[in-house]
Amino acid sequence: MPFVVTTTEIAPTLISPSPTATQVPCDPFVEDFCITDGRFLFQNPIFPPGNTSVDTTYRYGSTQNGTREPHHGVEFLNRFGTPIHAAGDGTVQFAGPDKEAVYSPWTDFYGNVVVIRHADEMYTLYAHLSKLNVQAGDGVKAGDLIGEVGQSGVAIGSHLHFEVRKGGDGTDYFSTQNPELWLKPSEDANGNLLGAIAFSVLDENSSFVFAEFTARYHLDKNGPKIKSHYVVTYAKDMMRGDENAALGDLPPGFYRVALKYNGHLYERWVEVQSGRLTQVVFVVK
Image 1 (cartoon, rainbow, N blue to C red):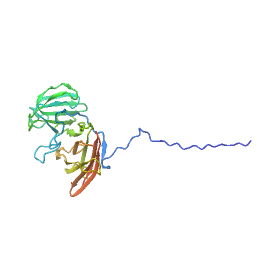
Image 2: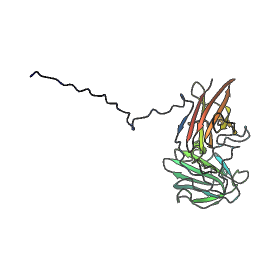
Image 3: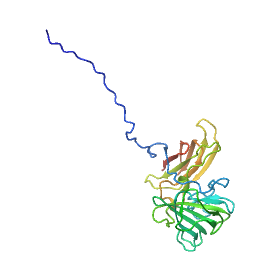
Image 4: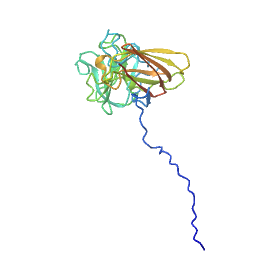
């Protein structure tokens, strides 16, 4: 009997990419925008029915058109006596009047102030209080009552001045971060989380530059404009972090950003998603 060889055709096996394969991160220098989870570590220090919105006329890094010192925090305009709550778990590092220039270059600048040390060398500062409910060394949990709104120090009108600081022992006045990028987004009237945008406006040498621009909000790209936001980059001595402008608590949707610099117009669509951070980089000439 002759020797017979039988062959069987084997179909090629298609190997799908592993679901755990490393994904190439979005590069905001290449893409029009990138969407990330952000770093929303802290909760709002004001609870409803108090005013939980940041004062948009004097945002972080603003000088109010050169009329005031660059702002190292944000303001929550509220009535005298409105409760103030810890933005996160931590230990009270300081509570009392700032009679010595420790947390700023000036005495009695913050008035009655509370400073909380959190994990990973993060600090939150609460200024111009009328009443203190904690003392140095106290452990606090997010949401604990720590004081009440007032107008001590250099405050004009009753409000909470709120800062986020990073690194060191929390005393460096120039270690502040934009709180709008660290506070958890608020909810809209339907209970949906809002979002935020961090802008970087750079020259060809990757140095931050001063710029003014607009971000026009649309539900979709083909729909009408709903609202316009006027944006100014941080004051010169505040341009030292990852961004030089930001907008917090934005409704999800699309924003047409228009920036004019040295006679050149730069425009693009960017998207904001619920509970997330959109990163936008403009390199201008």
